[in-house]
Image 1: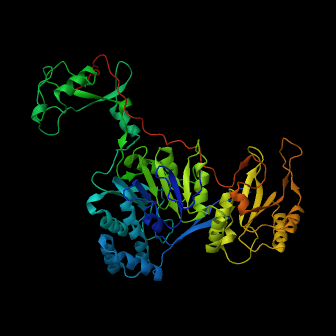
Image 2: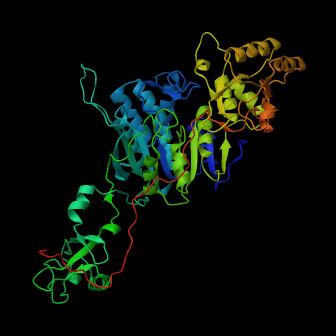
Image 3: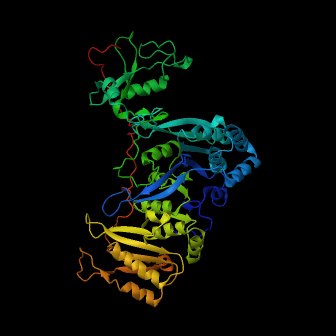
Length: 570
């Protein structure tokens, strides 16, 4: 893995971009026209909610360990007005649609949201190859307006499906004053780039009741089967022929004479002795691909609180959902783009399925989660990163631009997570991040507290953080600083002495309890010093293995025809 420096990435490599996806998508060095095979996007739904990342605390609780990831709220303001005007002034069908939506919705927060989406959808269509597809994940809040935008950008003739995903079981509206039915589904709007768009039919396991009722016969070698019609649905002259004394149906057989002879040789036909009875084909259970997946997806459960793949990120989708989309609309080696990649479910699914991937997110918090998620792969995937600081100067620039993003980036560099207080006004706990680690398998969680300083390091602050380490009863405290600490500062940190692990092979092993690391040292590869068994701060993704699929058909040649079961009427 190589950190980005802002240079144009190699097109063969998977890429992770930090930043606003619109200017990135408009950069044709990064995103050439017709360079992507599939786009999946799960943008904010305009739901007017705050979404938090949930982490485990040392005592195992989760209720207080939440950090706001993003606010799904949009407002009609000067920025939204400018984006709207730029889109309309640029012309094109998206501008016409947005202008019409303004007439319909007025200068509303909804129009602000749609104005944000319109230019992004235009760029996403541009980067798709002719055989490419786009899947937009949304909910009823704005799905009908988004479909109008998508029709304008892709053309209504390229609309393929509105897929309905049942994302929760649902118990209706629990409030006694409820005025509507419970909402249990999301919509996924599926568009093709052109009529040449790639699509591979998908299957789901067959209904057990169907199998039990239909596959009631068994061949001599133990294969279950059912008998099926061999009649052509429409008349074709070349399918009208007599076979082994059996006259054809009025429309002819379903297969040519050549294929009929092949099926006969393979033992795939039931040919009654009575020529007045109809020839039928044999359908073997072990060749059944399953039920064809339609536009109602009620077989992929959401990520519950106990799911192994749950990472605590808001709006996280199950990998099986993305795997189905990727397998339906791409081939191995194709490129998958997620411009709102969040915790990286699309990236993980694409990596499993041998696709190149590109992810974009606007927070360093998400980038850190994705980096951690990719460590579950063996071997770890190679990918480039663009938009993160590549040197001290870049870190200083990020700190000046947005100190919260700087904190998230610095904490991500050492595998730590931010604490909730750092986004709130009021009393400062003196802690910007935490890292939980274990000294041995199934051992108790140990605590490292972290403070991040973006400049103006003072001796008094060094002393204050020492008190925080003591107050929190942390095994280790780490101060990450842009400035180089003075000799007095390092001497002050040394007064806290050492942390000696409870479980250690070497009885003399010990670690500085108070450690100061500079950003320059992080770039040089130095990390906090603590027992090396395992960092358990971020919930680890399970070992990366593709979701089990319905077995593909296999062909087995039979040496003899199968007799109809006793009493079978053909």
